[in-house]
Image (tube, rainbow, N blue to C red; front, side, top):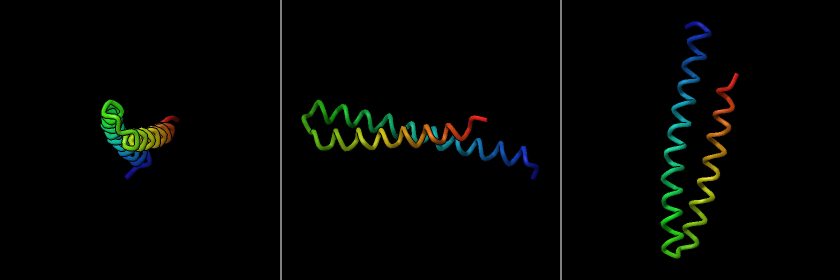
Length: 67
């Protein structure tokens, strides 16, 4: 396997991780919004914090993709 193929495969894998993390983040934001509307502050804050952590992870993975 050549170096360019290996780099392309790792870039594709990182992009898939980012897509999965962003999908999970959208789900968690939805859960947090519903929890805020249902006056469940504990669940709302917990899911909001996890969503922020997932955003940071996705941002760090995207930073890896930039040359």
